[in-house]
Length: 208
Image 1: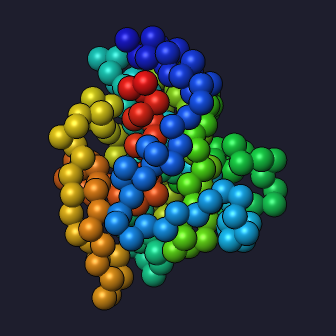
Image 2: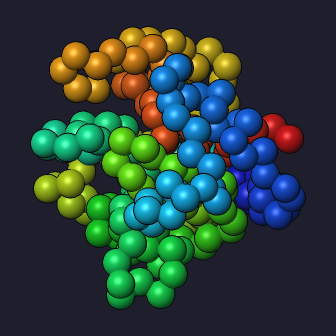
């Protein structure tokens, strides 16, 4: 079941991507649109994330997410994908995604990258995030970086694609700023913002 799913996804990821149309379905109402070739976007710092999937003991697909630790910053405590900013020593952005994945999760296996999704611009922190899709044939052992990651969340893919998982809420990411936003309900935790936009494009690709 899992192997057939991944083989099909590899093919779909080579087709034209739904891009912004899929992403902005999960954007909050005040979210700015930053065009990829605009002068503003050239000042954004490159970063990358890894969307990892692997089978559980029943050959059901699992998505790996992280819950970030609480800190003084824009993305404190958020549900996210393993990833971070590019470093000069990274060969390319795929190398960035893999390095950050290993640093944050301590995985004892090396994922196979099977494709990538449309980059997402994050106006609040001035990053452009490049998402890479990867898989493993079995669940790895993890040893999380506790200064960055509160916990790992292993999210069943069937929950991810369930329409009832998408809900609406009002959040206050910083004092005095309230945003009405769609979100993915991840085991009673709120997955919103750029990560939700990335995941929604993946959902569109899978359902295409």
